[in-house]
Length: 363
Image 1 (cartoon, helix red, strand yellow):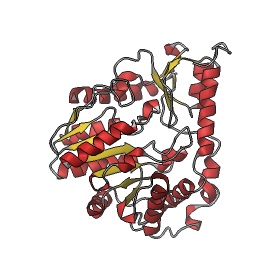
Image 2 (tube, one colour):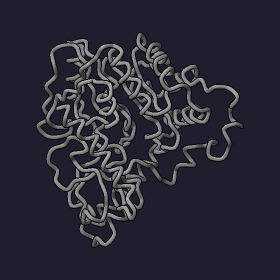
Image 3 (cartoon, helix red, strand yellow):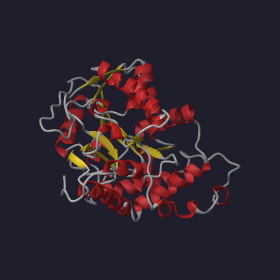
């Protein structure tokens, strides 16, 4: 199974080369944001230089910022009902740095094999390959698919999963997470949850089921930059048990150093928004983009979305019109012609709707 996961890396290298070709096609599966709410979400950062908001002669001291950690913990207590405190929070400059820290921690603690539920992000696959960690797949299907089959080992291990399943905008079902929690307690295993696209529900109901996994044996990554779809700032955090927090925070700091002052300011601002008005206006904008595609008949088939800004669907437009990530990029079988669509990608949405007759109804 590891060969299949590592094959995905070659696919990503190919897509990056294709994106750089002269006269390249529109990449509808891209990773960027773009929406009319950026200035609103930035607040004073939209019009005030960072040096007027903080002392830029000092290191940012992100992990030393107990008020930030307390703010993040408070947000999770409010929305998840979990008893997080600042002693459970490791703030960081982006999800990629956290993935690097977790992979290094696994290697340093002697974990030469990890188990995973597909899909997992390709950067995790890259780190496992480079560090000699063997990934073992424990399900043939993805968690949102009918007939999902979970075959967990009966010995202590490390399990990785992504919730929500970002490319399709689908949450991992609560019953699956309940099964994992019971197994985790029984085997004393670690679970790492890539929650990069959490707190983006289309139904407006916040709260993540993965927060109910045993805190002392769970590492859960959350990314406020995705919550606000402002990717030019780097901001994420890891929720861990108190006993592990300090050691993992020290490892993270020694691997990556501190962040820029602007990143610390944004981390505070993002936490304030998540504690306050949230991202409901952004979700409405994303849903409007989705409605445009369906109303124009630009989607021949689609998987229903419940979170995030990605859609997995089969476009009506001819494939030669655009560049995209399809099922093999996510270790997914079937779904011929389906691709990941970034609903915040204006040119991508235009490419899919251009020339498609209107009024075909909802897909």
